[in-house]
Amino acid sequence: MDRIPEGRGRGAQKPRETATRIVSAGRDPAAQHGFVNTPIYRGSTVLYPTAQDFLARKARYTYGTKGTPTTESLEIAWSELSGAAGTVLVPSGLAAISLALLACLKSGDHLLVSDSVYRPTRNLCDTMLRRFGVETSYYDPLVGADIAQLFKPNTRAVFTEAPGSLSFEMQDIPAIAAVAHARDAIVLMDNTWATPLFFPPHARGVDIAIEAGTKYLSGHSDLLLGMVSANERCWKDLRATFDATAFCAGPEDVFLGLRGLRTMRVRLMHHQQSALAVAKWLAARPEVARVLHPALESDPGHAIWKRDFAGASGLFSIVLKPMPEAAAHAFVNALTLYGIGASWGGFESLAIPFDCAAFRTATKWNPGGPCVRFHIGLEDVGDLTADLERGFAAMRQAVDAAA
Ligand SMILES: Cc1ncc(COP(=O)(O)O)c(C=O)c1O
Image (tube, rainbow, N blue to C red; front, side, top):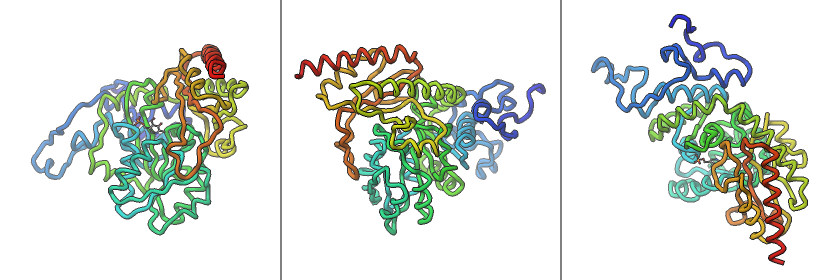
């Protein structure tokens, strides 16, 4: 045991580079009998040495819902990577969105939400939050500092997501945060696309950041998990809301999250590189009108992305030239390496058709052709583009059949 330095990882001086920090953050082998990883602690009851200790809740861990060494490892690591005062772990990304909003809203408040937000976030606002007396207004994701005009005296929070779900509009988070903070409002962000590795949320003005750990933290499409991190301003309220709801994640999922964390940076770099290669390949195709990917110079959000982000992940969309929807479906159906499914961030590629027109309220979604969202996985890029060729051949056949 004495060959294992005391307190390495936790509390030790932090190494500087992210690649190093992501390996060591939240780990304390000395506290785990020398084993590299914090194991799965399963438990409800925590036993106290005396009645007095029990009444005073005098213990390192007090109850299963409030935290274990396993959950604490991921919370510490995520806070360190996010530059947060604290993090809580919840059972899914949507649970993270729910908890974050519950932590900062009350009846009578007004909430501003980007029109390009993940659709279930809208559902939460339009149903449950409305029922609890919170009014939501949707805003153009490109609004920037002009969001000031949408504030009401009771506007309590601004919900952002960059880039937008499906449609990839880039939001000017620092400009929105400056306006919100001048009015004492809280800024929330769904940072699932970039992760804190590519967008340090709290350093850019976000008070409460949400991550669907289901995506890149997991990396293997085999778990559901959410993280909510907060800066000093909002941490106390976030933690109090977590304790009040006991909205806690399961120990196996947290363990898998910790396991995924150690390789998340390496995977993200690979997703980024392959997605950019496929996006550029698609941009040169005659069937494609536009590629919606903020890391491409042609993208309207590129300047903001370049200023604020350190990278891009594996998710982007395309707008096809005008053609029957059936032809776009034939394209997706003909792909053999791209699964047709919603939850992304795993090692595998995905492709889904989408149309935002039905649910946009502050902006019009009229891209001029059918749209497809891709997640580019860890497969060989040549194989992925060859598969897309197959899809385009099926698309041409469907177009010809419809003519
Ligand atoms: C941007 C974004 N946020 C949140 C979520 C929700 O994550 P979960 O599936 O874990 O609820 C998703 C899921 O697709 C997402 O795409």
